[in-house]
Amino acid sequence: MLKAALETFRLVVDTVDDGVRVTHGKGPRARRAVIAPGAMQGAGKADCVAYAAGIKAALARPLLTAVADWEFTEVAGRLVPTVERAQFREGFLDGGGGEPWEQAFAGAGSELRVHYYVELDQGHQLLTAAQVQAWGVTDDRVTSAARSLLYHKTMQGEPDKHDTGADWYHLGDGYDAARALALPDLDYPRARKGVVCGAPTPYDLLVIDLEGLDRAAFRNAVGAMFRASDHPLSDQLYVWRDAQTFEVLR
Image (tube, rainbow, N blue to C red; front, side, top):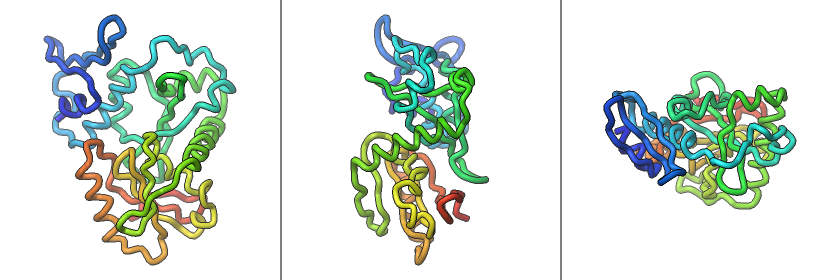
C-alpha cells in the first residue's frame, strides 16, 4: 500500500539492499531517500498517503532557495497553513527534511495537525522547527500570518453547494482543508453560532450550520468522500462551537 501511495505523488520507488529507495526528480537535480523495509507496514491507506506526502515534501524542497537565511518579516507574507495526518511528520523526517514545525488542528482527539508552507516564486518549502526557533518569534505571529494569507486566498473564490446543503470549498490550491481554521475570519457571526466542518481530503472542506444539522447524514457524506479519495485525509467531523472553540464533534 505504501508503494502505491508514493507513486500517487509521482515518486519513483525501487527496492534496494537496505530498504526502499524513493526518488524525486531526474538527473543531477534528483533527490533520494532510503526508507526502512516494512515502513508503515499494516497502516491504512490514509496514513500511508500522509507518510508519502511527507516524503514528497522533503524531497521536493527547492534546491536554490535558502529560506533559512530569510528573516521572519520576509517570509510572513508567504506563509500558508496545510492540514495533514500525524504520519506526514514521520515521512518528512525519513525524507531528510528535518523536524517540521507543526501545531494542533483542533482539541483533544483530532487525528490532524497543521503544517506551514513558505510559498516561493517557484514551488514551496515546508517550515521547519529549526527555522521558527532561529526567528525567535512567538507561535501566534507565525500562525496569524499564515491565517491572514489563507483568508485572502479564500476571498478570491466562492464555495459551491454540496448535496448535503453544506458550503463546499474545493478551490484547487491545495489549502481547502486548512480553511476550517479561517472560518471565524471568513464569517464571524456564523462561526459564533456554531458550524460543523469535514475535511475528507486536503482539497475538500464541507461547512454546515450546527443548528438543525442531520449529523448522521453529514457524517456519511464526509465518510464517503474520505473513502473514495486517492488522498484521504479524515472522516472526523469538527465543530466551531463559538468563534474561539474548535474541537472534534463527538
